[in-house]
Amino acid sequence: MKLFIKTFAIAILSAIFSVFIYDNYYLKSEMEINDSSKQTLIPTTYKINTSNIPAESTDFTVAASKTINAVVHVKNTSSSNSNLPTFYKYFYDEDELPERIGTGSGVIVSPDGYIITNNHVIENSNEIEITTNDNKSFKAKIIGTDTDTDIAVLKIDAGKKLPYIYFGNSDATRIGEWVLAVGNPFNLNSTVTAGIISAKSRDLNKRDGVNESYIQTDAAVNRGNSGGALVNTQGELIGINTAITSVSGGFVGYSFAVPSNVARKVFEDLIEFGDVQKGLLGVVGQALDSETAERFNVIETEGFYITDLEKGLGADLAGLKPGDIIKSVDGIMINKFADLSGYLSTKRPGEKVGVIYIREGKENKVNVQLEKINRAIFFYMEVRELTSEQKKEYNTDYGLYISNMNNRRLYQNGIDSGYLILEVNGNKVDVLSDVKGYKINDLESILFLNPDGEKEKIILQF
Image (cartoon, rainbow, N blue to C red; front, side, top):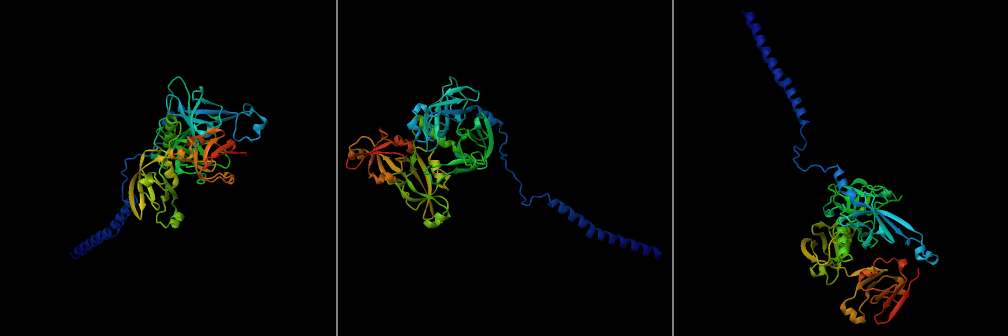
């Protein structure tokens, strides 16, 4: 009996010990392993992506089919070439100059045959031929050109409705967005390349006096693509392909397009007015960066710092002052000068824009009415159209007023601010468009009127 009790007691103790070992070592170790495996499946942020916005489509077939038939080949035949040496004029008549053929692309933007292309594609042309994607050719008429934006408008009569591309909103484009470049590089008709928007409001040369604000992409663009379409994945026109930066002359990674909002505004102005209507804010200054911010003793390193105002124009009348920093216009952030000039290029005189600016550390908002640009640079002279008072003062009903003289050669000949320009190459001038488009080699003579009422003619030789 004692042996039985002793054996039973040992069995009970062994069972208790086994349960203790299982609970404290084996089971605990297994739970730790299971917990560890679960941890590898849980995101470290412990958040779930609930976004319903899908990734942008990378199927470009729909966009290509909507646009490829509306992009045309442009052939420019000319016998006068601004790049030819001047001495050619002494040995050849105008109709005997060597023939030059240039090619590019264009975009049909209306069913009745209006086409947008680059000005440099059709300049100096004697004849322009348009070839559509179905290999039909037409003679084109130049409706108007704008050298500042490098945009030209052509018209063909096809006798039927043509496929065309709808304008998109270039201000709504985003960096990183997929785009297609459609054109005719190297005379290869109907070529489509894809890329993304690399940057916006790009100014290729900040010292050339031209207010550029390009869309930069990495879609392949080569010679012959100029004037072609830059479209989004919906097939909407968001730019006119215009330039590349290259050492070799071929595509090396980046191309540049005039934003569609600018191209559309120029297109409409040239058709309606025959000239581009530009709205002037009336501010003078420069874009801020760390260096200029230190120089002007301001905290802001982005925006447009106003150093002066044109009296009587919109910004002055709205109460803006030197020292104010423009941060946005109509919701468009102004981080550099190209942001400001690019957006204003889409507006017309008489329109109002909402300006948010900082003064003494406080943010303010004001509406500013844009005025017609009343000056132009001609042969290193700033010229303005005459007011009615100036016409009475100078006793003339035409001419342009020289408001600033930066031409050393003319200054040494006694021509200065306050003079009037009456004629260029024997042609009377009265509005700013009369002196646009002249190149230095084109100038032969200028007739001036001095403040004493005396006429002075300067013969120019280059």
